[in-house]
Amino acid sequence: MPSLLSVNVGMPKEVPWQGRTVRTGVWKYPVDGPVMVRRLNIDGDGQGDTAGHGGEQRAVLVYQLASYRHWERHLGRDDLEFGQFGENLTVDGLPDDEVCIGDRYRIGEAEFEVTQPRVTCYRVGMRLGEPELPALLVSHGRPGFYMRVLREGRIRAGDEIIRTGTGPGSLSVADTDALLYLPQRDPEKLRRALDIPALSPGWHDSFRELFQAMPASDAVVSPGAAEPAWDGFRTLRVADVVPESSTVSSLHLTSADGSPLPAARAGQYLTLRVPEAGQPAPVRSYSLSAASGDGRYRISVKHEPHGMVSSYLNTRLRPGATVDAAAPRGDFVLKEGIGPVLLVSAGIGVTPVLAMLHELAASHSSRDIWWIHGARTPLEHALRAEAHALIASLPHGHEHVFYSAAPPGGYSGSPGRPGRLDKDQLLALGIPADAVAYVCGPASFMDDMQVALTGAGIDSGAIHTELFGALASINPGLTERADVTPHLPSGAPGTGPMVTFARSGVSTPFPERTRSLLELAEACDVPVRWSCRTGVCHTCVTPLLSGDVSYVSSPLEEPARGRTLICCVRPDTDVVLDM
Image 1 (cartoon, rainbow, N blue to C red):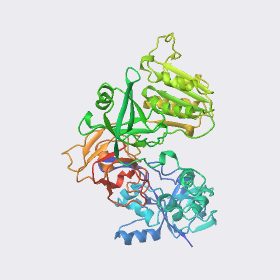
Image 2: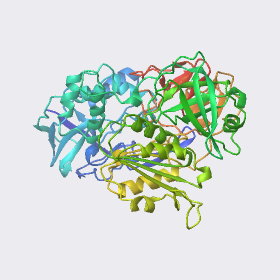
Image 3: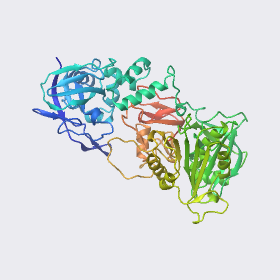
Image 4: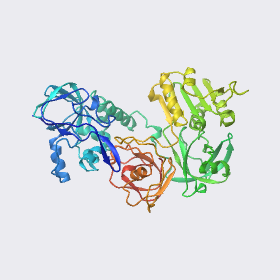
């Protein structure tokens, strides 16, 4: 009969790691005597990153003696002690390929239910001094598993483990782990997983997205996940340069040979490389500001006072010139539906939502469409006549424009009203609570709008935002640090291929002793997103706009074409990353 060998607990602590500080509870140690298990935790235990560990769905982590013996052989170690894999319960029995999601067990006075496999996390590798361990746990089918507490009570080492219930679907922990992290997923197993009530909500949502993306299902892959229309950069010709306001000009781009450009989705962006604006050639991204049904692209660029690229594009670029462009990308795209649509923007954030408005007008949409925009003055309100005409062409269009620098009485002959577009102004409009919202503008503006929209009753999942700059970091467990502007790495310049972080505006040669593109990004204080750091979780997946890379360690599943896992690749040639 399975038995409990050790109960292990540990409170979060700060640990130095690669020049930074990680707050983690992965250091667990055995405790003697009975210990109380509660709904959210075991007495004396805690987690440093509650987003990925702990809580009702992950109250207790289980790992097996057989897996300890496996790793002793595989890693050639004889120093492994109970609790070293971060588990609360070290058990004899309960192998991952036999225990199923939804199985229930009684240990001592407490009763538990299996909810999900262990989250692949870099900290278990950090605890054992084995950086590749997160990937090995998955590839070897030995992740361990979490349980929720159904009945609180005392447990102690030596207690028998009695199965009191069997999960529906007979989906083992190992199979569940493979479904999320390994390729060649079985649609039938995905369907079974979705029918298991005990499966934790986070894993359920991930499986639902995977199932919907499978060609065999009735669902459609998200347009944002589609592969780019071409690899790397191609030459586009400037057909026209049109001033749109005192600070914004539109560039109309065609193919160099005059053939129609591939269609792009409204809301996507185009990335330009402009050698004439500086060396190394700066790279910038601009949202498409019109539909691309005519075989050409249009971007509208604001002239920033100290912007090298925007200055060149607005003041020096002429029709007939050429630019290098990566294929349109981005998942900030208009979703199909019949309900109300809110297009909310400020300043140059108008561009992607204007392209959406073009798409809605071209299809003669009968949806309830709200155009809500904020600018300083009519003179600085780019593309206002165009937006007004599009709204006027729609049978259920609503237009609300705000001018933050307007005098109290507003501007004569202008439909815009005085005042800044903020959450109070937005709530006063009486927007429909069942709408889908698309918001673009400065980060603080988008934060305010998200608060206002949820306050108006709109579901947070129906609010979509587009950020021009780098995406917010995901660095689980790292202690807070002040925001630092991205910069060149310290020390002598590298001698490897040129690496460009397009959103952050940094280009630097790759240093030979740097292990991965992720490590270089961290050295430049470029905002990065990661979790496992071993190519398993795909948190770090990043659009590779141009260039070739090689994997330092092979990922368990390679990302789609045009994307790369920066945690485990090095550049073979000059590369441009959308980060």
